[in-house]
Length: 238
Image (cartoon, rainbow, N blue to C red):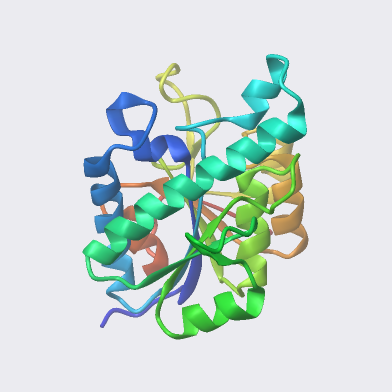
C-alpha cells in the first residue's frame, strides 16, 4: 500500500463536470469515468467527502441576474446539487463503494439530513459522504460548502478537480503564454484574482490554513494528489 500524504480529503466537483460534452444535464458515461477516478483513491484507503455543484442543471446566481429572486434561485440550485449527488452515489455504489448522501435541506425519502457527527461516523466506517444542497442557505456557493464541510469533517485538504491541470496566471484556453503555478499562497491568489474559489470560501480556508489542491479530474491526478506527488497547484500559507 502506498504512503498517503492525505488520509481524509474533501473533493470538490463542478456540476458541469457531470454533463460531459453535452454541457447540461447528467451524462452517465461521464459520471462513470469520474467515479472510476474516485474509486482509485478510495481503494488506497482514503476517507473522502464530496461536494458537487449544480451548474449543469440550474445556476442560481445566473438566474438571479435575469430577474429571479436570489433566494428562490439559490434554493433551486441547491436542489440541483441533490440530483447530481444521487447520480454520483448510484455510480459509486455500482462500482462497489458504499456511500451516503447527506443533504443540508431535509428530504428524508431520498437522503439523510446533514448531521456532522453522523457524517464523521460514516467516514470512519469507510463510506463516501456526498454533501448535497450546499449549506442549506441562499447566498452561499458550493465553494463555500466545500470549505465549510472540509473543516467540519476534519479533512486534511480540499481537492478541486477541474478540466485544467492547475492554476494559471490567465486562462490557458485563450492565452498560449499562460504560466502555471506549482504552488501559490492564499494572499497571492486573492491579490491576483485567480478565481480559485469565491471570497467567502477563501476566507474560511485561509483562516484555518486548509490546503487546496487544484488538479485535473482525469488522468489519475486525484490519486497522485493524495499521495503528495507534485501535481496541479497547491494553495497554502507561506
